[in-house]
Length: 100
Image (cartoon, rainbow, N blue to C red; front, side):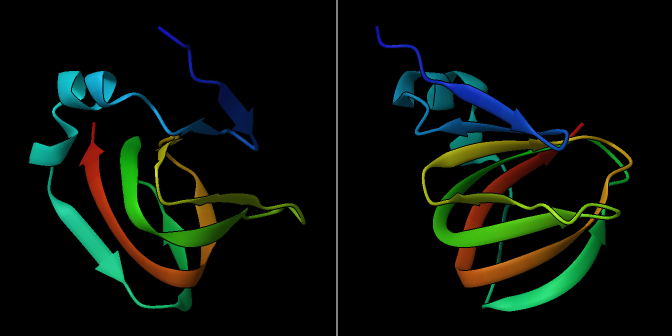
């Protein structure tokens, strides 16, 4: 089984195209869904969030950083509790998510 690469940047973990077996084990498709049109907005994570993007393209700019983390459809992303950031959505997002 091919292992997928998990990258971490600015505290955000991204796993590109995780295998469907892993998605099923995590029960991702039973998680609640959230979506939004292209937009830009601030967000603060009051809990750790794991999400899996079905559609969309996003750049997230953590507060205090000039850098961004980019992810999109097929990526599983983990945001740490306490992170404040700005979401810059260039393609409408449809995602499953879970807070811990």
